[in-house]
Length: 419
Image (tube, rainbow, N blue to C red):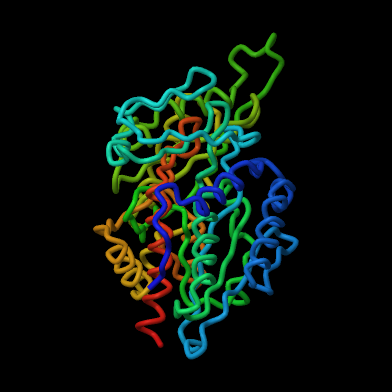
């Protein structure tokens, strides 16, 4: 068992998080490079230096900005299966992640949190989980940026866990791999990640929300590219001749039912979501996301897209449409079922940290979705991050500490049961 002096502010963990949050690592949506922004290497190099200072001598960052390292097994535990912990270094590209100013709200009283700048506030009524953090310390940004708890809280918790293990030589453990990845926020976090070379049996992404939650489901995801072709002609001579493809596309987007869109669905409900439109009079392309927790639910949604696209063309005789469906990722529950220890031990780890486990589903995808499909079962563990991707992002220090304990318990349980 780890021994650590009680400290309500958990300074090692918090100081790490604050330091990482201040490093600008925003990824870039339309970039053609990998990683999508060179600045992600700034945090990668810091983490490599810290890992080496802890004694993880194989710590390195490669040309794709993947940071990897290995904590060797305690003597006698070398045959325990290799497990891994993964978090991403980049932050969401549509809200500034530059010059982050972590701001502390001690002994939170349950009311709205008015951020220091830009007249922004976190409304308690819109964040019911805040009520579970009354009396605790909350960290936010100052209103000019996001905070970056997604996912620098996960990085801090992993680094803090390694430190506590190395400070406590009696803590028995098997071999543990670490990976910090770029570009998760733009959907390319493990695009070049070599699962086989990494060599883990099971991994855990530290990238979840509320305390006690372990997520083993994501959406199944496809995308549709719907291309409308019209006819261009000089607008001065267009009567009865022009077929503006952009208007056909607009007809299609407007016709998609609100029932079954992201703004009207929750829980296990899937959706169809047009996210982009580009083109001109001659040809216009609409990008559409298709999501469902059940793989069998994707085909009917694709059929609906085709149906409404064809109906739009009927309103503009002479126009044509082509619909291309591309597979993106699948619900990781299918692959996690092949290695039940991954979830079983994570849920037990939560219990040992004094919480009731919450088995959750992610209305989205994670690096774990792709890794699980590639043969590395990867559930997602809570970190405490809340309201990410916006100026109102926040995190409770208590949740960060509980996540750290959960991570340590996962390592201990694998060692106990698999030696």
